[in-house]
Structures are given as structure tokens and as C-alpha cells.
Image (cartoon, rainbow, N blue to C red; front, side, top):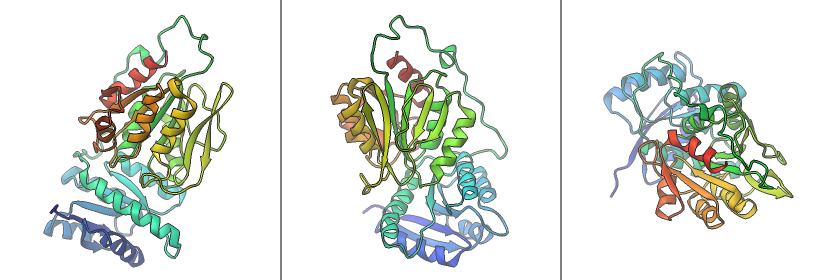
Length: 355
């Protein structure tokens, strides 16, 4: 019998604490260690018994969630899941929390909406279970990350003699979950200006994907935006599927574009990596490069195999560089990955595949 995952819920709203307690208690693998209405009470509880995972409200009185997160990650790293409202400010702050070492973001349960509660129950429990497996590192307070050392390849692709021979551009299709926000930053920052068009599914609640895309757009050479229905996949741009909608790659003549649509949770997710990968297998075939990155579960494993069988080049992130070696591990088990590479090597390999 596996040991239960002990969770500490930190939120200033009694209603949210109650809702999260009920949702998480419904999973036999999860045990509620306790709840706290602010970081000071939480700190006291952590001194008494260290939880496996903390769910932490972004905005709280006395000490905000980010400050408390920084204290935890610099003193005694514990996997933290940020719990945020849907406001734009809230999503900005929650994304900042990921940079400070939080593992995941969940949307606060919207009470009274039956379908939302049923689906959020699955998503919240899965997120906490994923967080419990994450490798967390101590983060020094106030230390900025050093930018990666790049070669000239990152700025301009090596010239090729047959640039215009292929009638259809290559497209890059990426799926990620837990730990993916940081992995995608590393991947996209290394992309040259004329990188092939990229479509990404990162498991994340709705509204957060827009802020996430905007943040990446500021720091990458290529442009990054939240995908909208019928957006064309073009060189020098990455499209990130919006939270709570599926994204599919479609083709009209030589033009690739994305279709954004509602639908059930697939592989327990919406957007689902499997849905995107299957559409790429169907509409792009050997013109696609598929990449599966860090994340818990198996979303994308079968889809990557379908892409490989359709002639696409496929890459899985290696165990060493994953925060949670789940999705890539399942893809490797199925024989879906042509290559298994460290996070730092993926961008260069993708650019080469597309030349």
C-alpha cells in the first residue's frame, strides 16, 4: 500500500479551504494534514509536521503567497501548488510564483457549477499528485537566473541549399505539463528568429495561458501568443493552446492553422496533448516534429506514437532534466520517441530536423 500524500491547504477564505478539503479528501491517495488561514499559521504547522505538498493562495493578508513561497523554497523546499483566482493580476502573480519554484497552478474551485466542480475535482487531485512527485530545488532569495549560453545557431539557422524545394513548411508540435512552464521558456528562448512555426499544449487553467504567452513573448526572439481559432502557423511564432480548450492542427492547401474547440477532458486534460498530436499526425505527417516534455501521467504518449507512425520526427525529454518524468517516460515505453534528449539539447535538434 502506497503512503498517502499529505497536503497542507493555505488559504484565507474558509469557503475555499472547505472546498479544497472536500475535493482532495475524495481521493484515496491524498490525506489532508491540515489547513491554515495565513502563512504564519502555516509555518507553525510545517514546523510540527512537514507536508508532502502545500496548496497556497496567491493573495493573502499579513503575508502574500509569493513572499511565503520564497521563504519555503529558500529554507526548506516543498512542492507548492499555487491556487489562484481568475483575475489577470492573479494569473500574473501565479506565473511569477512558477519562476520562484512553485510546481503548478490551479484555478480556485468555482462553487455551484456542477460540471466545473466535477472536472476540477479530477484536475486538482491530479495536480497535487503530480506535485508530490516533482523534484524541487532550493532557490536562493533574490538570485536571478543566468541566461543560457547560446551559439550562433540560436540566432540564425545554418544556410541550406534547398530552402524552397519543400512545398509545405515544417511545423513543431510540443506537449508539456508539470514543470513545463520553465522547460518551455528554455526551449523557446533558444529558438532563432526564423524558427519553424510552433504549436504548444501546456496543461494550465484558462486565462493563465494568455499571461504565460505574453511573458514568453517579452523574453524570446520569436513571437509567442495564446492561440485563437484559425490562427495561421507561421515561421517565427509559437502558439500556446488556451487553457480549457482543445487545440488541433489543421491544414488548408499549404497553410497550417489551429482550430480551438471545446470538448470533454481527454487523457484527463483539456487542452490535451494527445488531441494536438493526433491532429498533427493526420494533417502534417512527416512535415511535423513532435516534442513531449516534463509532466505527470501519459497525456501525449499515444499521440506521439501516432505522429511517429505518420513519419514525423519525435523527441522526448530525458529523465535527468524533467521535473516529473511521466509523459516522456510513457512515450519512451511505447517506442514513440526517435530520440531522448536533455532539455538544453531539444531546441537545436528541432531546428536541425526542420532544415
